Length: 75
Image (cartoon, rainbow, N blue to C red; front, side):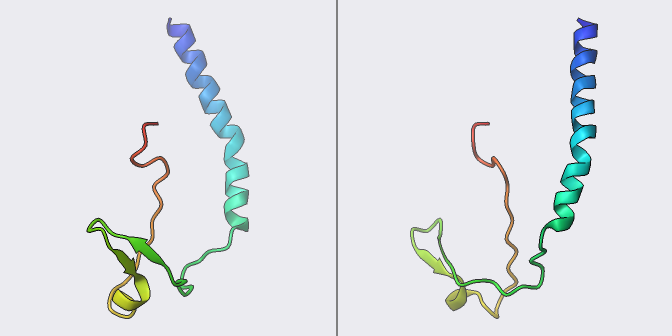
């Protein structure tokens, strides 16, 4: 039992150690969008109406867009 657990964690460690340089290289190649102008978009709100960013928020508030992978999903 203990040996299987060690083998599992050791394999996971080696996998991460192997993939880490590839992810760092891909991150360096990616273009940062910091400071770029936001495109025009409309999103649904929780109050059953559409919110247009330009009309309601542009110039009044700061906008932070985030992404949560697998958020609110049964993963």
